[in-house]
Image (cartoon, rainbow, N blue to C red; front, side, top):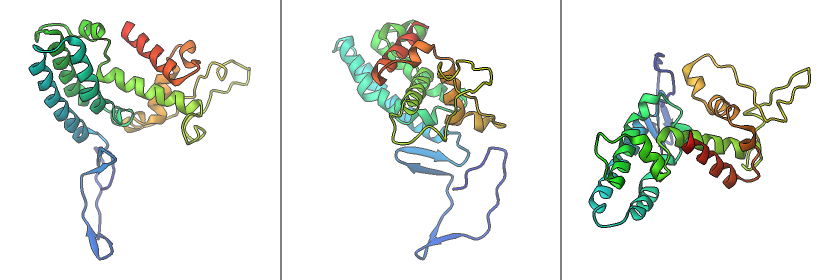
Length: 228
């Protein structure tokens, strides 16, 4: 597979061979549970995730007449949400419209748990159940990744990913943990973790950035998102 932009045309000559076995060119490859397409749009992966989520939503509809809401909520968090959150730091950085299908599936799930109709507004239901939609889950996961990276909670250093803003007049940007936004020229560049992560991090309140633990950071940020 050759990764390129949507508008780029790549021609190849010859073939690749390993141990007398010809390696065929593919448009999508699976790696540790993520389906990577040649243009990094993540459409194929999102479709697979959504297909799995839709099947589990059907379980909620079948069980909602026999079990209390607490059990339905537990099933949602154990059967549905893990499929959405796995690797979302990466595949969630795509066009907003690409993830619309997952948002619609989430709306079906919360209406199943609350016995809402198709006309019932979804935002109050998300807040009532204290659940985040797919876009919020992406932002939360990226911010948690940033917190761990900047606080040396990950096995690799943040030195090659991000840099703090430095100012010759001695501003307090580094003290405030404000990061330098990298310069990118393409939309694909804006989808990168080094850009999107800085974008999300810099708008966080300083008191949240300075939390003492990952769990406290995550809990406080999630509460802020639900109250937004």
